Structures are given as C-alpha cells and as structure tokens.
Length: 531
Image 1 (cartoon, rainbow, N blue to C red):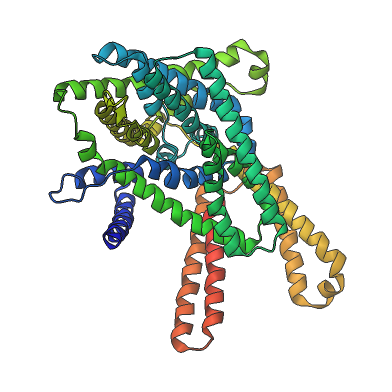
Image 2 (image 1 turned 180 degrees about the vertical axis):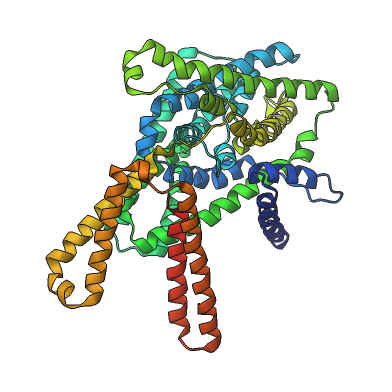
C-alpha cells in the first residue's frame, strides 16, 4: 500500500513537471494548463481515483505556500497599499459571501441563508498563485501586482473565518451579528499574535545560534507548520499566523542569514513551491469524478445553471466592488487625493478581473461535514460541484483572457524608476567601495596594477551612474541595453564551452572547473535578474 502510494506521488510529480514544460511551450500559465490537463486526465478509463483531502491542503500545502508568498512580499509595499489590500482581502470577501448567500438562497430550492453563507465563504477568496502566475512576465504596473499579492495573503484567512462561522450557524441555527464580528476579530488578532511570537523565537534561533545553511533551510520549512499548527490548536487563524510570521522574518532576513544560507534557501524553496503548486492545481482538475458523485437529486440542467450563474456573479461582484473602493476614498478624503495619484481605470479593471479561484475554495468545499445531526449534510455535493465550476470558470475564462485584456487595454509597466534607482545603488556601492580602498589599500593602489585597475573600475561606475541620474533622457535605449545584455549572456555560453573543453582535456582539477562554472552561474543570474 505504501509502495503504491509512493509510486503514485512520484508519477504525479513527473507528470506535473512534464506538463509545466509543455505549458511554457504553448504559452499558457501553468495553473490553468494543469487544471485543464487534470480535468482531461480524469476522463481516461482506468485512471486511479484521486481524492483531495482537505486536511492535506490546510495542513500540508497551505502553510508553505502562504509562507513563501509572505516571504517574497515587501512589507514596505504591503503597508503602503494597506487600504486597497484590506478592502479587497476583508471587505470584498464579506461582500462576496453575502451576495452569494442571498442569491443562492433565492435561486436554489431548500437552500437556507446560512448554507448560502457557507457557499459564499467557500468561493469568496481568489487564489494566491493563479493571478500572479498569469501576470508573470506581463507588463503591468507594480501597484497592481503588489495589491494582488497582498490581497492573496489575507483573503484566505477572512474567507475561512466566514466559512467556519457559517458552518456553526447551520449546525446550531443561531446567528448573532455582533458575536460573529467579535469572533472574527478575535480569531484574526490572536492568529497574528501567535505568528509573531513564534517568529520572534525563530529570529533568536537564526540570529544567535550556530546554524548552518542546511539548518537554516530546514528551519524555514518547519516555521510555517509551527505557526499554523499552534494557531489552529487554539482555534485561531493559522493562515494569519503564517502570514504575519513570514512577513516579520522576511523583513529581518538580512540580519539572519549568510550568503550561503540565502542562496540555498532560495533555490530549495523555489523547487518545493513549484512542486506543491503543480500538484495542487493538477489535483483540482482530477477531482471531477469526486465532484460528480451524489448529484443524482438534481438534473444536469439545474446544477449547471446554478454553477454558471454563481460563477458570473462572483466575477461581477468583484468588478462592482473594486471600482467604488478605488475611487470613493479619493472623493471623500482630501488627504488621500493629496498623497496618491488618481489611477487610470485600465489597471483598476485588471485588478477587478484578476479574481481566479483555486485550491483553498475546493479544500473548503471538501471540508464541509458529511453528516449533520445524524443525517447527510444538505446540499454538500452541490457545494462541491458549484465550487469546482467556479474554479474552472474563473481560472480558465479569466486567466486566459487576462493577457489579451492587458494587450488590448495597452497597459504597460510603470517602470517604478528602476533605471534611476539602479544607477543610484550602483553609485552608492561603488563610492563606499572606493573610499574603503583609498583608506586601507592606498599603497597597493599606487604600486600594484590589479588594485589600480579595480580603483579605475569603481570610478567609471560612479561616473556612469551619476550621468544616468543627471541626464535620464540621454540613457541608452532599451533595445541597446537588451542587446548588450544578450551579448554578455552569449559570452557566458562561450566561456562554458571553453570550460567543457578544459574538462575533456583534463587540464584542470574538477573542483576548480566546478568553481568556475558556479561563478558563471552567478554572473548569468545577475544579468537575468538585473532591471
């Protein structure tokens, strides 16, 4: 049994890797491609039955994925955009859950308002990965990406709290608005507090204990599980515990890790998160047989009609919410108008259109109990089917249309003054390096050519950077910059070919050759990451 499950997992990882490569080839975002592929694979006769356990998602998948997203989020940007992030991750979640609750209550026979809030809590949060993966590589303003990433960090927590309150209401039949509000705030606040307490303990361990790169990497994987399990044990928000702890440790990471730890942790996390995301999205597609079971009490026309209407409603609700929440604060408050530039409607529409649902919604639907007071939970299979269709509808329809909309609306990256900022950093770094050399190695600079050459190099860097900052209009065109970078990358490939010749000639030790290969890898990474 263990061997069969292990073989199944390995096969799934292999399929995810192959399909992701194929998605790169056809130019479709891999979450969309994997969901569609999983859906098609589920129709193959004889395929094993894949059942996505909600505990797997909430305990195994969700903590590391949220932690990685929090780690790569800038606290400065997150705080600067706290108003739109809060309006989307809390306000829009509650608004969506409420609208879906009333519409489903009016549309579906026997569907109580409390059940409607259960459904609303399930499908209210957009997926943390889908929007950013679709937008990856596209030219969109930094503000749009920051808001979507910030929203995805918090909306899972708020939707799960709404979901749990609604489940309790269905079970007990009692709902008190003020008590639900107090519970919401308590669960959220205590989740954040637990995450920060554990993050401070881990900060002390990383900072003051004799760790190694391997230990640092291992601790970063243990951290989100500690935060999530501790918060959930006391019935508080594990999601907010992971997010708050991840943001704190990310903000202080420059104090914690050596360069070896940073590099090793980054590479290992990139691999693990890629595999976790891939498995999650292909499992969504593979859930169709599970979703279709138990729908015998409804006609095909009925369930499809319910699912499509609610899918359209979730898209429209987001559009209806995003535009007023963007412009009304500027109309009502002079301080906001003075501090912030009024955004164009085009990037606002992209935020409104980036509401793809994902694995948290499906896991929540699967987490609906099988029984209620000794009887089968009413409409549970309908919850599953509607959720699956909403995920498929939003992910495929909105996800595939998003790049086309960006092109059609002629939306471009605002640049965020990247060239000027890059020149400023280069100038500052070169200046302190030059000052240090003059203070400590002045004699060597005068007497040894390598020291003198390095001094001249830093002086040239300062001269070029200062000119770029003073005369941005004279900066080299982007085409020339790209051509220059392409030439440097080509030279790296030429160097690699020469290293291979040296390896075949056995003219140098393998250790030295690997060192030189690593240096070229770092150089290529710098070129590909530079703005």
